Length: 92
Image 1 (tube, rainbow, N blue to C red):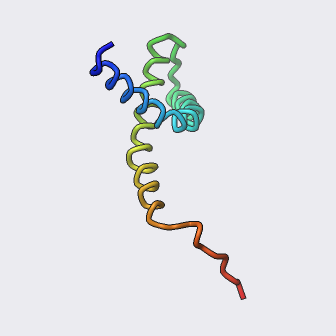
Image 2 (tube, helix red, strand yellow; image 1 turned 90 degrees about the vertical axis):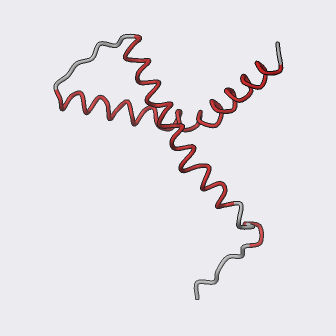
Image 3 (spheres, rainbow, N blue to C red; image 1 turned 180 degrees about the vertical axis):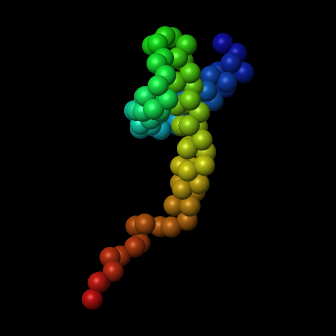
């Protein structure tokens, strides 16, 4: 294997790993929303490989967007604070 192939493979693996939790969390709500929407529209989709592939692509695209625009900025924001030095506030 060449260095270029290893680098590309590593980058792709990191991308999949960084979005895997979002895919895990969002696949069921997206599937349920799809079922409700199709029921409202009165459309019936057969369960084919093409339909499943589109679903996987949509979920992965959403996961990438959530990672880039929610998780990464929050992680960057959270690094500003040193949570170890915080003390509980007395409510009285």
